[in-house]
Image (cartoon, rainbow, N blue to C red; front, side, top):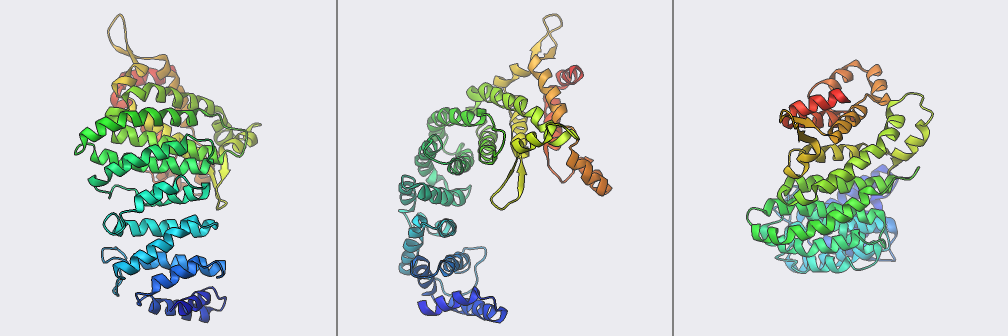
Length: 425
């Protein structure tokens, strides 16, 4: 069986269309044999096999799990399902690939493990969670692989019974996030999984109120200190991709907290608002020079600071980070701990007036809401795009739209003070 699978995998890598198509059909037939996933797993683990064939094998297992591992899969295709003994052997071998020296093998294996976990944990694979937590104490590559599994596996489909495991995982994530021994990419993964954990805690906060009340406050005390430390770090003059990605994930976590478990974030809200406001002030001038001002003498340096290339070569910007900060302010603005930053009572009339901070924020929002040079170019090429972007239901979300939504939220809560603040600005 293993030899047939190996030859078919080799054929799928052929430059000859006929050979490749015949091999793909052969793999479909071989998949109907319950021995197929174990044969493919053996190939993926075999050091003597070519790397291309090993990668093809694990990719094939990924598809197999979606199609034939469980009748509960949305992509299930009719055919025999492996028995528990065969599944256990495949799970063991695929898990070993999480420690592979090859990144592609590790990452695809992580996706396969996460997919298997949906169907097999905790009943058929009870040790998986502890195995992954143990892997979080391994090498940097192993830590990233384990985080990748958690990143695809930890989601709102987890049941109430798994909340205790989340309570074990979060301190491990915080340890990794707070350690300088790990790369920025690893920190990003840790924060991303933490954000998924917040989603689960939010869903369970009513049915497991005692657990949440006991665990969330100390969790937030530790996490928010580290999150704000990452957010406050100044950007360098260039090569800021890892730093911007980490800041963006940190803000996403804060947004999830204020939306999902708002009653616990109150004591931290002033410090969060101050940190975000400091960032908005720091980034305002570079943003204008990079994206708004035409023929600015500082355009190149500002662009180098705020634009970065991802691994696939695509250019990305600071936009998601800015939009995240605006959303957090929008969500938190009406809360009691933050209200004092926006309004104060007039000593004479008792009316609510905008604070100096509110006035300065309004002025900053006007700057960020300006039309960018990219927008002008796009609109010049396509007037229909201009109409769509300026429509209330415009389909391109960007910094300008995010600012407009924040202003609308502030208007709903502080109508008169906002008008006065905009007038001052």
